[in-house]
Image (cartoon, rainbow, N blue to C red; front, side):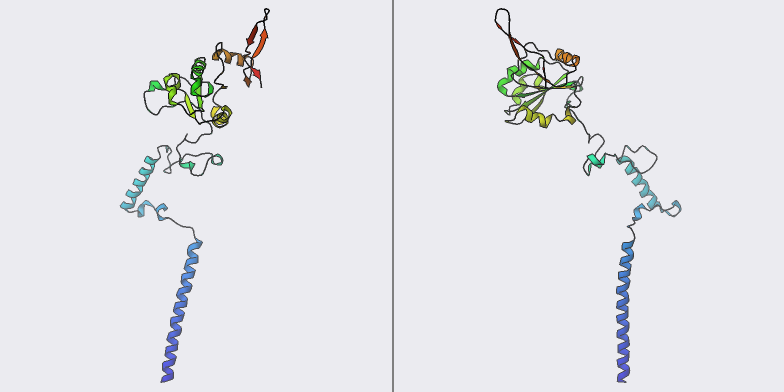
Length: 258
């Protein structure tokens, strides 16, 4: 009787152990089966219309309308919106979602108002860019220099003394571009703010000294001479000669080759 009880207990223990082992093996097997197949989203499965419920049909229609409202550029017959594309090698990750024309390879210094009247907009785009590295003490000479340039010239001031609002007393300064960084040279500004990707929209660029005399200078006439002689890079020079009476004569050739 005692041996029969022991054999029954042993058989029951073996059955329980086998059940636990089978459960563990089934769990492991199911895990490997699950990771072997790609993730399937049931929201992306299109069922035939015959087996769709009215609720599913309504939700699908609402989603399609929401997508069409979210992407006004989707003008095709497909329900899949066409996202704006950018040139990936030259733009950072994440720029794909930016609106068109936000990411560009080149820009300019043309002013674009944020508020005000349309009459305040540029009547025409300036063809030339003139930069002055200025201090407030040279304001009179800068004012005289700027008046030698027509509306075809965009004026840009680099302020090495930090004073910018003081220039508002001049009407032309309200349309100029102001960059204020203290104690820097004109070439420091030029290397950082006259990048080729920015100034390529201008035909010619002038990097002007604040103390340069302009008594007999005319910007438009100078451009005509530059185009006539097909000059690319030039600078002003000063020559001193004497007339027949021995008096000194200062001659300013329009430019010197660099």
